Image 1 (cartoon, rainbow, N blue to C red):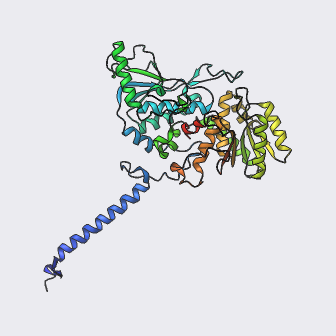
Image 2: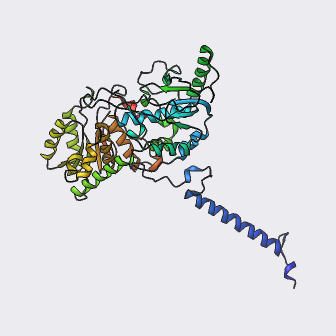
Image 3: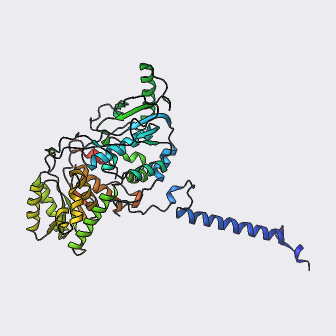
Length: 452
């Protein structure tokens, strides 16, 4: 028998052995290729595959103060953007503490992307008076006053290579001493009878309105068409930090965008050192982090000391937490809260008390300004077992929202975590004491514009 010429016959179908062998080989090759594709893409090994939702970052703990920056949601948005050479944004109108400043810079960058800006002036940090915390404009410091500049530059370039970060206004080519033009995004579009504190409900029209404004103002003042040779600089006005409805970009973007702003490494290290000291002091038992917000710039309608103390104690005793890390800038009322808490058998520590026997760390802490020391508290409060803060303090809100990214409160977790629940109960990791009756009067709209 000639096996090479053997023919397989079934119901009129005929196939030689050699052809059958080729079909089988081809089928196996296709199956193996598909298997490898799915396996590798799930592990993030196929960097050019345009299916980002299987890159393996779903369960990354984004609540950590040094969580890795997941770039694909931002990269996807930037890939969909039509860029306009010569449009440059600045984000220097920030002020206040880490909550306000962080939100301002992120929202400003988001507007810059929406505008198709190919340039971004590296933001500076507006400082405030340590003698009068309500005095918010006390001179500017470099971006590195709070944040890791190298991380910001690398992460933004990785996701949005079309956008160049310039060191200063003067570093932008062809500016010829141009000044930044104030930009008020909420004024672009008819908002009807909306409360003035309402979010920007025209973000989907922002690009259209922005381009029209640029063309209209160029015609009015006889300016050349914006280009690399004829750039124009724009500076969003103070207040845009509570404008952009973050849900418009989807949970993956909203939950990862804040990763652009990582605290500088020495502050992260100091915060981790205090966490380690707290773990040692409590013999590794769970501890609560408490943010008491009663400094002299606290607004009159915020919860007063008695309200905060009462509600903090109620939660601490209900959850049977025996140790407290207290963060506050008011030393007098910190002492009052400490007495109140210790009367119930709980121990209270602060960053200063934890470092009494660690001269080197204590020296490094004391070298920081008031707002920089608040960043150290920020790191510790992100790391505690349970967090208690105040609404609508942007410091407390940012911590609670970021901690929420590690919950399993009925959400998928990770980058797909649903937003922080805006109520007096909170979630399994945090509670914010406050008033939740009036959407505008209690500033609840801020939660819709907060980048975790």
